[in-house]
Amino acid sequence: MEKLAVLAFGENEENLVKVTLLDRNTSKPLLTVRSSKERHEDFYGMLKNAEVDCLTQSLQELLVDEEMAGRFCYVNLPDSLVIYKCFKRNVANLPNFKQEEEREEFKALCLKENPDKKPLDNYQVAIMGVTTLGEFAYINVAYVLKATIQALQGAFARNKMAVLAIEPNFNGLRRILRLHFPTQPCIFLRAVIISGLIKKTFLA
Image (cartoon, rainbow, N blue to C red; front, side, top):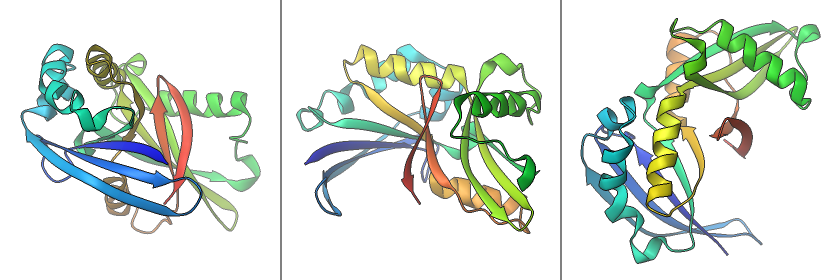
Protein backbone atom coordinates (compact mmCIF):
# COMPACT_ATOMS: atom_id res chain seq x y z
CA MET A 1 0.00 0.00 0.00
CA GLU A 2 1.35 3.42 -0.99
CA LYS A 3 0.26 6.39 1.11
CA LEU A 4 -0.17 9.65 -0.81
CA ALA A 5 -1.07 13.24 0.02
CA VAL A 6 -2.10 15.63 -2.75
CA LEU A 7 -2.04 19.38 -2.07
CA ALA A 8 -3.99 21.26 -4.73
CA PHE A 9 -3.37 25.03 -4.78
CA GLY A 10 -5.94 27.14 -6.59
CA GLU A 11 -7.89 24.24 -8.08
CA ASN A 12 -11.19 26.09 -7.66
CA GLU A 13 -10.07 29.25 -5.85
CA GLU A 14 -6.65 30.92 -6.00
CA ASN A 15 -6.53 31.43 -2.23
CA LEU A 16 -7.42 27.87 -1.30
CA VAL A 17 -5.31 24.77 -0.73
CA LYS A 18 -7.06 21.41 -0.56
CA VAL A 19 -5.32 18.39 0.95
CA THR A 20 -6.53 14.93 -0.03
CA LEU A 21 -5.11 11.82 1.65
CA LEU A 22 -5.10 8.72 -0.53
CA ASP A 23 -4.04 5.09 -0.17
CA ARG A 24 -3.04 3.37 -3.41
CA ASN A 25 -2.88 -0.39 -3.69
CA THR A 26 0.29 -1.06 -5.71
CA SER A 27 -0.73 -4.63 -6.59
CA LYS A 28 -4.03 -3.71 -8.27
CA PRO A 29 -5.78 -0.57 -9.59
CA LEU A 30 -7.39 0.50 -6.33
CA LEU A 31 -7.33 4.00 -4.82
CA THR A 32 -8.98 4.82 -1.48
CA VAL A 33 -9.67 8.37 -0.30
CA ARG A 34 -8.98 8.55 3.43
CA SER A 35 -9.85 12.18 4.13
CA SER A 36 -9.67 15.72 2.79
CA LYS A 37 -9.50 19.21 4.25
CA GLU A 38 -9.16 22.80 3.08
CA ARG A 39 -7.43 25.97 4.21
CA HIS A 40 -8.11 29.53 3.02
CA GLU A 41 -5.29 32.09 2.92
CA ASP A 42 -3.52 34.21 0.32
CA PHE A 43 -1.69 31.21 -1.11
CA TYR A 44 -1.67 32.72 -4.58
CA GLY A 45 0.17 35.79 -3.32
CA MET A 46 2.61 33.70 -1.28
CA LEU A 47 3.45 31.49 -4.24
CA LYS A 48 3.66 34.34 -6.74
CA ASN A 49 5.97 36.35 -4.47
CA ALA A 50 7.92 33.27 -3.28
CA GLU A 51 7.22 34.09 0.39
CA VAL A 52 8.74 30.98 1.91
CA ASP A 53 8.35 32.18 5.53
CA CYS A 54 4.62 32.82 5.11
CA LEU A 55 4.14 29.54 3.23
CA THR A 56 5.97 27.65 5.97
CA GLN A 57 3.71 29.07 8.65
CA SER A 58 0.49 28.68 6.65
CA LEU A 59 1.20 25.06 5.72
CA GLN A 60 2.45 24.05 9.16
CA GLU A 61 -0.92 22.96 10.52
CA LEU A 62 -1.67 20.92 7.41
CA LEU A 63 1.74 19.25 7.15
CA VAL A 64 2.26 18.32 10.81
CA ASP A 65 -1.08 16.52 11.02
CA GLU A 66 -0.61 12.95 12.29
CA GLU A 67 -2.45 11.63 9.23
CA MET A 68 0.34 13.03 7.01
CA ALA A 69 3.02 10.84 8.59
CA GLY A 70 4.69 8.50 6.09
CA ARG A 71 2.87 9.91 3.07
CA PHE A 72 4.35 10.87 -0.32
CA CYS A 73 3.38 14.47 -1.09
CA TYR A 74 2.38 15.79 -4.50
CA VAL A 75 1.58 19.46 -5.17
CA ASN A 76 -0.65 20.89 -7.91
CA LEU A 77 0.05 24.52 -8.81
CA PRO A 78 -2.71 27.02 -9.70
CA ASP A 79 -3.15 27.64 -13.42
CA SER A 80 -2.43 31.34 -13.06
CA LEU A 81 1.18 30.59 -12.05
CA VAL A 82 1.87 28.39 -15.07
CA ILE A 83 2.50 29.48 -18.66
CA TYR A 84 1.57 26.92 -21.33
CA LYS A 85 2.84 26.75 -24.90
CA CYS A 86 2.52 24.32 -27.80
CA PHE A 87 5.36 23.81 -30.29
CA LYS A 88 4.68 22.38 -33.74
CA ARG A 89 7.47 20.33 -35.29
CA ASN A 90 7.90 18.11 -38.33
CA VAL A 91 7.98 14.47 -37.21
CA ALA A 92 11.22 13.97 -39.15
CA ASN A 93 12.89 16.64 -36.97
CA LEU A 94 11.31 15.63 -33.68
CA PRO A 95 13.79 15.36 -30.79
CA ASN A 96 14.24 12.00 -29.11
CA PHE A 97 13.05 12.87 -25.62
CA LYS A 98 14.35 9.56 -24.27
CA GLN A 99 17.86 10.89 -24.85
CA GLU A 100 18.78 13.28 -22.04
CA GLU A 101 20.94 15.46 -24.30
CA GLU A 102 18.18 16.00 -26.88
CA ARG A 103 15.62 16.59 -24.14
CA GLU A 104 17.83 19.23 -22.52
CA GLU A 105 18.47 20.90 -25.89
CA PHE A 106 14.73 21.19 -26.52
CA LYS A 107 14.14 22.59 -23.02
CA ALA A 108 16.83 25.19 -23.72
CA LEU A 109 15.00 26.07 -26.95
CA CYS A 110 11.74 26.45 -25.00
CA LEU A 111 13.41 28.88 -22.63
CA LYS A 112 14.88 30.82 -25.55
CA GLU A 113 11.39 31.19 -27.02
CA ASN A 114 10.02 32.20 -23.63
CA PRO A 115 6.42 33.38 -24.21
CA ASP A 116 6.38 35.83 -21.30
CA LYS A 117 9.67 37.60 -22.22
CA LYS A 118 10.99 37.41 -18.66
CA PRO A 119 14.61 36.58 -17.78
CA LEU A 120 15.23 33.02 -18.93
CA ASP A 121 17.10 32.01 -15.78
CA ASN A 122 13.92 32.55 -13.78
CA TYR A 123 12.05 29.63 -15.37
CA GLN A 124 11.88 25.89 -15.21
CA VAL A 125 10.12 24.13 -18.06
CA ALA A 126 8.33 20.79 -18.20
CA ILE A 127 7.64 18.83 -21.37
CA MET A 128 4.03 17.83 -20.76
CA GLY A 129 3.60 15.52 -23.74
CA VAL A 130 3.78 15.00 -27.48
CA THR A 131 0.98 14.36 -29.97
CA THR A 132 1.78 13.11 -33.47
CA LEU A 133 -0.65 13.77 -36.32
CA GLY A 134 0.46 12.93 -39.83
CA GLU A 135 3.75 14.64 -40.62
CA PHE A 136 3.65 16.92 -37.60
CA ALA A 137 4.03 16.62 -33.83
CA TYR A 138 2.63 19.00 -31.22
CA ILE A 139 4.80 19.37 -28.13
CA ASN A 140 3.03 20.77 -25.08
CA VAL A 141 5.20 22.46 -22.44
CA ALA A 142 4.62 24.32 -19.17
CA TYR A 143 6.75 27.10 -17.68
CA VAL A 144 6.97 27.76 -13.94
CA LEU A 145 9.08 30.35 -12.14
CA LYS A 146 11.99 28.79 -10.25
CA ALA A 147 11.23 31.00 -7.26
CA THR A 148 7.78 29.38 -6.93
CA ILE A 149 9.25 25.88 -6.92
CA GLN A 150 12.00 26.85 -4.47
CA ALA A 151 9.54 28.54 -2.10
CA LEU A 152 7.35 25.44 -1.97
CA GLN A 153 10.32 23.13 -1.48
CA GLY A 154 11.63 25.39 1.28
CA ALA A 155 8.26 25.52 3.07
CA PHE A 156 7.97 21.73 3.00
CA ALA A 157 11.56 21.24 4.16
CA ARG A 158 11.10 23.62 7.10
CA ASN A 159 8.04 21.62 8.11
CA LYS A 160 10.12 18.41 7.87
CA MET A 161 8.00 17.08 5.02
CA ALA A 162 9.37 16.14 1.60
CA VAL A 163 7.51 17.10 -1.57
CA LEU A 164 8.11 14.54 -4.29
CA ALA A 165 6.40 16.26 -7.19
CA ILE A 166 5.25 19.75 -8.16
CA GLU A 167 3.05 19.80 -11.22
CA PRO A 168 0.59 22.05 -13.09
CA ASN A 169 -3.12 21.57 -12.48
CA PHE A 170 -4.00 19.00 -15.13
CA ASN A 171 -7.57 20.13 -15.74
CA GLY A 172 -6.38 23.71 -16.16
CA LEU A 173 -3.73 22.57 -18.62
CA ARG A 174 -6.29 20.88 -20.84
CA ARG A 175 -8.64 23.91 -20.69
CA ILE A 176 -5.93 26.46 -21.49
CA LEU A 177 -4.47 24.42 -24.35
CA ARG A 178 -7.92 24.09 -25.92
CA LEU A 179 -8.45 27.84 -25.56
CA HIS A 180 -5.15 28.78 -27.21
CA PHE A 181 -4.90 25.93 -29.72
CA PRO A 182 -8.52 25.04 -30.64
CA THR A 183 -7.61 23.37 -33.95
CA GLN A 184 -4.64 21.35 -32.68
CA PRO A 185 -4.83 17.97 -30.94
CA CYS A 186 -3.72 18.00 -27.32
CA ILE A 187 -3.07 14.48 -26.07
CA PHE A 188 -0.36 14.35 -23.46
CA LEU A 189 1.23 12.67 -20.47
CA ARG A 190 1.38 14.39 -17.13
CA ALA A 191 4.84 15.51 -16.10
CA VAL A 192 6.30 16.77 -12.88
CA ILE A 193 9.04 19.23 -11.98
CA ILE A 194 11.30 17.96 -9.23
CA SER A 195 14.31 20.11 -8.36
CA GLY A 196 14.70 21.11 -11.99
CA LEU A 197 14.34 17.56 -13.35
CA ILE A 198 11.47 16.45 -15.56
CA LYS A 199 9.89 13.08 -14.79
CA LYS A 200 6.78 11.61 -16.40
CA THR A 201 4.13 10.23 -14.10
CA PHE A 202 0.62 9.04 -14.90
CA LEU A 203 -1.09 8.70 -18.26
CA ALA A 204 -4.06 11.04 -18.26
